[in-house]
Structures are given as structure tokens and as C-alpha cells.
Image 1 (tube, rainbow, N blue to C red):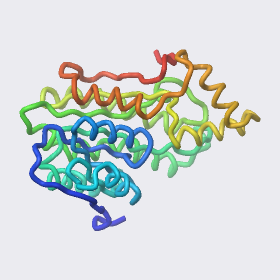
Image 2 (image 1 turned 60 degrees about the vertical axis):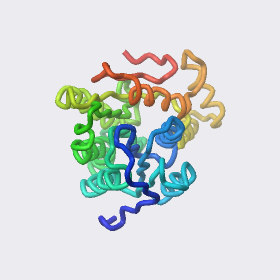
Image 3 (image 1 turned 180 degrees about the horizontal axis):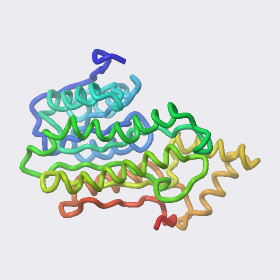
Length: 270
């Protein structure tokens, strides 16, 4: 992808920046649920994702472009993150918040058997994608009368050992550590927090359940039920469950920074 491939759908200049948010990985799953929740709450949302389906997602949310703008961008690329910030500035006079959600799962292989190239790809998106976006948006996040807001998507897998998910777990643990450091370095001009989902029924998690089912000789539904039985609240989470926590951290949590909200139905994480 070249710089010219960063495509924009919809733009409405002249809006104040205080309630404008960039959401990465927003074409589907948690990112899309978050974008939907925020638009419903009156936020202006720049939706970013790797493929052109993010343009359709933004258009479906708001065909006028007044509250939703889609951008095709690869956040692992510094240039794309910078272009994403430029879109936020041109469409909505800058962003006051970032939801760093874009991520890939990586191969379900024992950590010592994963190639360096496969590990680097996961880190490039899950860790450097967060850092690139924060760097690109920093000036916008820190310039307003209200402190900026950053929410990083961490993971239950960063907190518990999960064989076969070593690269993903390590990348999410690195992102969690990054969040804590940024919460100090960017204070008081920006709060930085994390949301750590557990078993959330997204396309990525469905693929994980499929793989677990094959390994365990079960059907998809049997494996899903077995996982749900380990959750004290008795069910898988939804994208909307995670979006609720993200919305709180963006909209209400004036005196919370460096904190992780676990959205996992009570799964043990300490």
C-alpha cells in the first residue's frame, strides 16, 4: 500500500474537535461496535481499517459524513498513521480521542515454533500500530481545553498464559505496558487507559473457537459452550459490552488514567 492508497469516504469540515475520535480496526468486531456506540452518542468518528469495507461501514453509519468518515489505512505504517491524523484534522478539525483497537491474532502455534517474520507482523500491527497512531495524533490530542483521551485495546491473553497464542499475548502485554508509560508521560494533557476483553464473540474469536474445537475433537457449538462455562457470568461477551467500557473511559472518566478495565465476565485475571 502506498501513501496514495489511504482512501477517505465522507468528510464534513468545521466541527469542533472535542468529541471527535479515531477508532482503528473499525470495519468489524469490537471496533465497529465502538464506532456505532459513539456515533449514537453524538461523537464524530473516523473509522480506520485495512480494507475498503471500512468505507462501506462508515457510509452505513452516516451517509452524510457529518458523524462518520472511513479511511483505508495500515496503522503499522508510519505514513498511514500520519495520513489518518491528517484526515481527522481536515474532516473534523482534529481528534480529541483515539481508540487503538486494530489487531491481528497471529498463528496458533507454540511460541518457539513461530518464525521471526510472523512474530514481527503481529508486533507491527498490535504494538507499533498503537504507537504510530499516538505519535501521529499527539498534537491533536493535547491541544484542546479538555484533556485528550486514549483507550488501548489490551486482552485477557496478556494476563494469563495461553498456549498457542504466544505472539498475540506478548504483543498485547507490550501494548498494555505502553499504555501505562504513556499515561504518565502524557499527563496531564491526555488520559491513557486500556480495556482488556475476554471471550468476545468476534470473527477473530470464532476462528479461535474453530481451531480449539478441531484440537479437542468437538463441534463449534460444543467448544463455545465449554468456554462459556468457564466464565462466571455464563456467556461470551459482545462487541457492545466492550464498547460500553470504552465509551465510559472516553466520556466520563476524568480522573482515571493508567488503568485497565477488564471486560471478561469475571474470568480470573489477577
